[in-house]
Image (cartoon, rainbow, N blue to C red; front, side, top):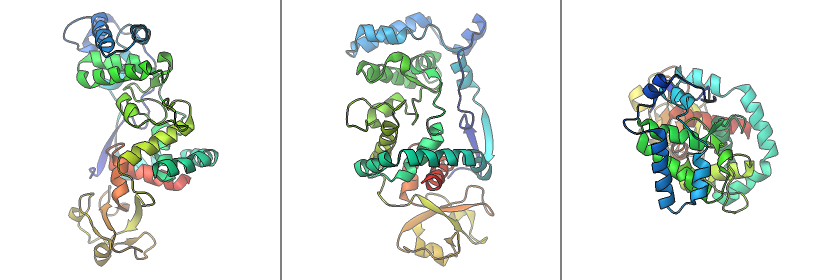
Length: 333
């Protein structure tokens, strides 16, 4: 369970920006790379990528998009805006009426696609809408960085070099398969791509084209976006037709030690402890098992969460995020 106060990095501002120039001394301090020049680093990546069977000309075209470490990427990685929020504050900032209205309009427009996603993946439309909304504001905010430039910068930086080098090679693999031109592969400063904000490894594992082809366009094709999110949740264990959770009332006497995703009981047992639906009524399926999440502690909002709540957390391991996805999905569909 998340602590009563949650640290949210970059979620509210999106980490968008453009490259800027810094003095050479500051650039050297920012990169922290132990040995070798950036050109030597790129040559090593080029050699590794072509050794994987990727086209030399394609790799050269992609790596030509990065000439030196992108200092804006480094600034955002090292100095991410940090917000310490309660759940109530997070909910107010993330589940805005403007975003809900945008989600309802997007749902009306994409209703047919979402019906087909449900049929193809077995994932209900609500969490797909919720994730799409929280990740990119229904495609409005996807990041303006070239993914090759961002990942190369972070792989050279050294702080998480192995992870970002692996993601860089996977991004080159995606380009090598002809799924998108190098210049069009855009995303966040950390390399999360398109409207669902998939890292390259997640794209290769989960991205799925709506028409069944091998090229899923998660940047511009909304049907591909929702199909890919649905496929991600499906492969993460989504149970069709089951709820993620619901808001509840709990007695003040319920100890916080009984709360948390790992403390599951049957709804019958929870009712015996005084727990009820938000409107005070009894649960309709007393045999179902659930756990209580009460992010702000006694006196704050409480939710009964089920298996699918933990599936949403596979996308982002945060109780706040999973609650936000669940609520946004319910509010927009």
